[in-house]
Length: 610
Image (cartoon, rainbow, N blue to C red; front, top):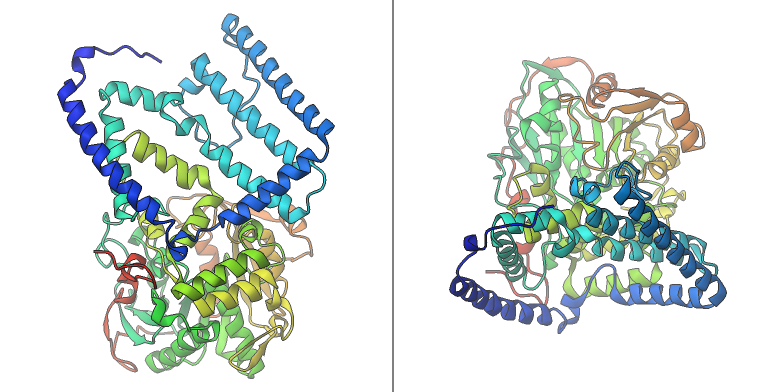
């Protein structure tokens, strides 16, 4: 990497001093804001809880020190690896064609710049980092004296620390940052510092929990543009009916139950990648629940309330609007968990026939192995979380956003840190990232019930383990034909866990495994053809056995699902016009609930933002 640059091109010393003085003043204000975060218990709360992290790392240290000989041998092994690396790098100075000893794992994009391999200095820094990461991973995997939960948490926390320590995240050891700083005469670093301070000021001493610009797209103009209207409003949800795009439609309407951890328009981004727009143009009458972004005044709202004021209320309104009593039900993530509860509730009441088919998108029903999300939920951590939610009324959106970001810290935290604060670059507008940054709060009563009964105790799979609206829930009584779409790289709803949940139902189940992750694997329109998916009719007990016998199909799963869904959609009827029968249109889609941002809903003990 060339470091030559004419010194005459650099700013005048007086200009640099003036900007440095401004930055110093702003830094002082930001420091005060950060300090303020640690003066109030409610604002100090974090996930993962610092005390849990400290206890876990202390347990790891005790386990390592319990057998000094093993620890010394491990340290000597690390030194031996470094010595072998140094010898290899010296040999590469003579023969540059020698391959590196340590290479990034497939999919690791941090070291994609050519200088990380072509420049021996940066290649050595990279390989020292990679060998150290591998050493720590092996050390934690093999140290005796740790229970599985503590070992998994320790591995996760150490992985987060190593991600933060990556040479890509520091200006002096990142060739891209150094090149940009030299080419811009230091302007890129100054822009990055200014952007960092601005974000901290805007966040009251906190950086954004989720990356992405929030002003690049407007709801109703750029995103969530499928024409429709709100025909029902409860305290917890609005029901949107979409205008038809075809002369005739299938008789049975579709009700989509999205998760209330995020906003519904993940399924209605821009027209080209909108699942709702796709369904409307395929001749379906589509309804979707748009959940409220709750404040402390709704802290008492329970999981039962979400069932009653969400899909149950929607079904009554849909029957009035279409004259159809039977519907096709679609649930996404947590919305799919609620949809399964609805099916079991209707089955217990003898009304299972009201649902012609059910589709579950990346939905967990069996939480026995919740994946890395389970690292944040145990009795101790849940007690701390409940105490915080009771104090402020909700779980603030930023906490869930941070958890999801930490699951993929290299991609969702540090890559944006480098782009925005080290390279000083404005993040490009991206619809998916704007949605990701548009989080929602969780009411205390609902979230407490959900975490305890599903994640902690896994009671949903026990017949009668959960009672909702006076009805014991039994997934084994669900005989409705079901389509399960899971994704192979899902960090939130691991596909092997969703597979176990699919086998809990008593009716015919079509299980489909898509490529990519929790979001991109679902929002995968037919054009361009990406990712592909696996299908198999049989459902053997073991998920890996299912995959071994599955057939891979290129392209999107949407057309495959549409063909399955059409079997339960009924006859074709004249298209239904908005407001022609049933509830009147209250306001145009996307409605007012979806426009409310979490930062506009101050919680107890936290002042409203100006």
